[in-house]
Image 1 (cartoon, rainbow over the protein chains, first blue to last red):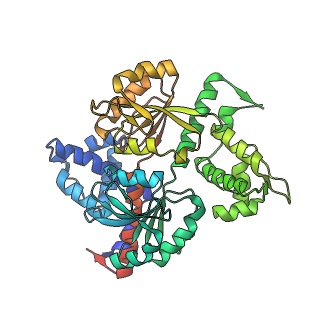
Image 2: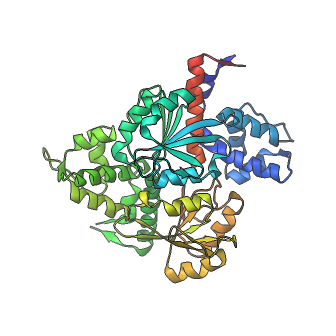
Image 3: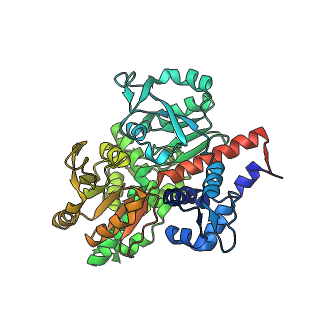
Length: 223
Length: 223
């Protein structure tokens, strides 16, 4: 027997980040009526070596059968169990601005595993509105509702200027996990998990690499 | 004199990913009327050591003055120039589904530096519609428009099943950079830059770490 916490600690973050891609591939195979798939076929779709597929899937407890492959249904279930995606994860969304509204409207990448219960905002114009089926509540109701509904996950899409203040409020509401879409480095206790999702960073990398490519082709120089 | 391409090659990706955060802090200081800021103050906001601030900003050519600090305006300009964000980056968005619509509607994180010219889709119901001020065009018009308008960047928000087909089409249209929001590992030539932005990966990491925390607290075991 091994403690789950210990088992998880051993799993490298790149492996965890790849698991949703496996899920996508497996769901698509299942739709096509395919019940068993070889590691080699998955590897081709993932653009990586078959050995990595076996190593990655092994963290979920799944081991392929030699010369047969992976059972599609079993593997889907194992990954979803590992990620906790077979249970619904209730979450509050804080900040019903453009990005918050976008996330409320985008059910696609959540695949049943993330359930945004309500949105909160401090803007009186937004409070009371229903955005993509979710009601926008005043931020002053957050504390009461979070403890009453046992919601431990929050999606943070507020302006940078209030990101830390709202985070402090979330922590006092016993929120355990924050999906942080702001560019602010949040200060949180060790017990709280923050996943940063700053899209500007991705855009910065893309723009810089594009500029690099372009300049290299033109042979331009800089002083 | 040093080739720009060479200068860029030396810049580590974590540094590039932090540059938008510096921009956010500096823009906020400028709004407050602050003209000069010390590395220590920026370091406190970034939750990192002052030496890292100096190293990061040095890649843009900016060096703080001892005992004085960084000129806010000069530093903003240097970062924006480095990222190419003082010029508008024209882009096409491919796939006007939920996420595509969300990104079209979210001007916030683009900060003047990304200009989505048009959206493309293959769904006849969507073609011709105007979403957040951008017209949705039929995918068959992509090739002609991309070459005529010299658009070299594309945002990919199509279903996984067609991601590679659309990517091949983009490459034949001379698109140089793809901001990939699908979970598919795209096959592209070396000259094309792909920045992967799979939000499911971030959610997977958050959920796994939350489960790890929760189980550790409860002292649960696994066989």
